[in-house]
Image 1 (cartoon, rainbow, N blue to C red):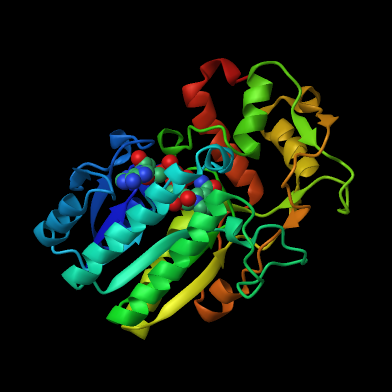
Image 2 (tube, helix red, strand yellow; image 1 turned 60 degrees about the vertical axis):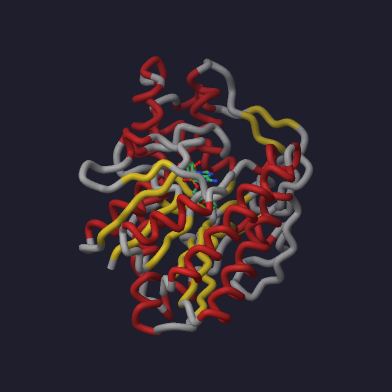
Length: 328
Ligand SMILES: NC(=O)c1ccc[n+]([C@@H]2O[C@H](COP(=O)([O-])OP(=O)(O)OC[C@H]3O[C@@H](n4cnc5c(N)ncnc54)[C@H](O)[C@@H]3O)[C@@H](O)[C@H]2O)c1
């Protein structure tokens, strides 16, 4: 099959492209390079520079390459920016998706995988978040992902297209330093940045109702996330037209912020220099968000290979490539 990978020049997309190639699929990357890097696209893979807002370019690409399925990763992903610029997020993430769905349903594309997020759950008050936990997003980014899931499901049902929404938890690590995430938008790179600057990492609130008082999150290695796309794509193929799947992609293991900072201190060699300071809670941070990974494991037979230490180690290699002064 030939897959269109939107956002394939991005951090996660680059790993999905490689995972699909590894199992013998053909791929075409479609990306506007707003946050992506063309050097992440492997040699020999066709690359189209275009936006999901450009319907003509989408139509042309689907026909030119005879696209059978789409993995749609292209989106804006920063929660704080989505609060400041909500309409930009609705335009890119929702209108862009609408364009793409109109194009693929007109072209008769049979499979569609959508990058969703644990942000759809908002502030879940459960030990393990299952796919049936109510979705109550608390910021425009999470809203665009939930609306996106609805659009994908409705379009699939109406046009007999097999669809899936993959709700990623906290994505970390890299398949190699050159494929690492270069943004500083979540805990691991934020701690790397502080250590590189010779400053203490910060914990936002240590009075949550968790084992050590700090927030608990579920991290997943980006290579495992990429392999989950292959598993889901296969499942759609086996189950056929009209299938719709919603799956959490996480390890199903909680790691507290304090535990993560301590592990980063060990892995990077910063040790006691990584001793954090504690400041006030940030509004909108849930105490605990940990996936139930049962559906992926039990119904689709997927298992993650990498643990949290491997995520930190590979993310650190990538960080050091871009910040050589960081290495001790
Ligand atoms: N990184 C995470 O922890 C995480 C967690 C949950 C969900 N997600 C989702 O995964 C997807 C990929 O995230 P990422 O971390 O790789 O981000 P990224 O910014 O590295 O990748 C996004 C890619 O999409 C491209 N893009 C953005 N808007 C576009 C548009 N309108 N048209 C064409 N291309 C466009 C960018 O240039 C970039 O290459 C996103 O949909 C994001 O919301 C990411």
